[in-house]
Image (cartoon, rainbow, N blue to C red; front, side):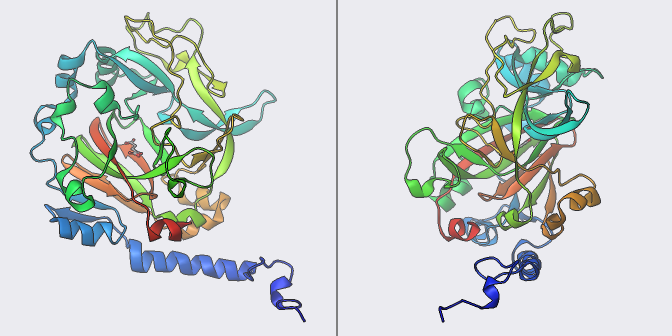
Length: 400
Ligand SMILES: O=C(O)CCC(=O)C(=O)O
């Protein structure tokens, strides 16, 4: 008799490697429990002025997020950055701001269809070029019917576009240099937003245009992707993170969605409203192919930057399918929604291991590569994050 022939492994409902649906559900329960008990725990640890060894032991070797205090004490940004001072310095600078009607950029939403039903699509924000002073007014004097602005361009925007303030933060974090041996900083990003904006659940990818060694590539996609570790630094305000370990990939749904992007409606009102873009100025189009002018109260007439947030050099969500089909693979849940409404739809989410934490002024959150995160602000918040190259090791293997 051939090995395996006639054994239970061949029975209906069993996978080729022998796990039936009951076994699989037991495996899920065990994976969830050992993840929680031996690895993730129930809260994000706080390290005050850690030495390199402490950070190494508590966070890097444990492959767990931690909040680090004391890394930003000597930053000039801590003294000078608030929205008013930044506006003084940069009021005429043209900046790129993401606009949405509801504060949800790069997220899965239900939209009405022509036949009166609803469908879920992945939506990109409208990337609008505007003077900093317009952004400042939209943040300081928001009106009920305003579109929601979020300075969340990524793409290394602090180093590339904010020369006036880039030297107010270090070019790298000394603790990181010591622990990882002066690693490459892939990007330094500036984020300015408030409680109206939410960044949906995702993990950080950094797409590279150059040819990199194939073992560094995410092998589920045709696009070269590096995973990065994230050092997220709050200069003022408050941010709340909901984090999940990479092994929760077994419990976190991911589906393909048609992608749509917001663009300007014809005859939009920004001129009438001193640059304030209104919710009604935005319309959702298939595939984010808008080439309309995107100057919102701007003195220039630059065209829409239609690079989406899965474009080169920024954090995508899960992965693009790498084709031009306009389909995007994304996580269709908000973990901060009502729990029962999520598990009704995705029962395996019951095994997921969320960790929640809030960062305050001067806090740095270390997010190891491949950890999922969902982010929101509790008030007007200015933050900077460093994406640092991740060297691949056994964790990469285990997580796959
Ligand atoms: O601050 C945010 O809204 C999102 C940050 C984030 O997702 C990231 O740094 O990868």
